[in-house]
Length: 405
Ligand code: SF4
Image (cartoon, rainbow, N blue to C red):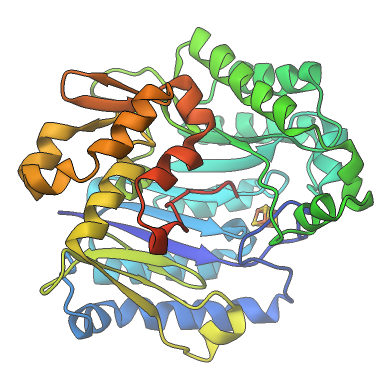
């Protein structure tokens, strides 16, 4: 099965206050060393897979440069990364090739480089079309810049665009949020991601909120109920114009069967298809000789990665594979087919989850149609609760969330 290839670029121009990713502001001199290290990793992918007893396909049908801000790299660095990927993998002619870009960086020169690299999809970390909101969390762009850059991308032939939005930013109101969603719709992009602000101690804003302080505009952050309402409002506004939800945070404009606007790369995460990641905190999932599969992850810090600290390796047992099939598959609006799971893992193995399923059906978090099980609208809002019910105690962490950048 063709792979998804992920490259992590952990550099940003500034650190957004809500950001809980392994990314930071580094001097440009760090970029070159990092790219050299990435190229080594890409060249060594087959050896690592063989040492771990994994199967690494020769072909790849998706490439995703995320981070961080991959568009911060210069042309030569981007070109060398893509050349290395093409040198190691047979990238299919129809591959989806995405680069995450910070609005305000999409110069004609950068767009030219992206095209030269074979990029055919750009994901824009807009988060809000209200300048005050974007600036309050450290974003450097303005609404007008985003619109100009979308126009520039389209004129250059890059029309397959995603816009990321975050519900729950400081200063956001129902009206300002409706404005951001309306602007996104008016921009005519085929894909939209809507995330709710994550409050945890991995971000400066999250820590301030937990402490009850007012730095980083924390006292202007809407409460949880308002944020949940914003998310619901976005679901309704996007659906009304044919931008259909297909995953908890992801929406795609309905397209012809020949042109599917859903993110092929991200679908690999939720449907447990193989992918391999390179760079800081990059995760991989591959079929393995002696286990159902193996997950492995590169070090979370730039220093550890540059010092060649070993990957964290997590063999996926049969039990864990079933759990993953539930909590990843249920993220998708199409849900999971219990009959397919019974065929894959056995009737008895799946029966062990009957009580978790019945509890969620009883609580109105799941619905059951024929053999299909899927989240209700309420279940999507409370998805972490649902997923926790499908995990045994040791695994109630890391439910495969694909985060905003
Ligand atoms: S949210 Fe994105 S752009 Fe902002 S610091 Fe994090 S990775 Fe960088």
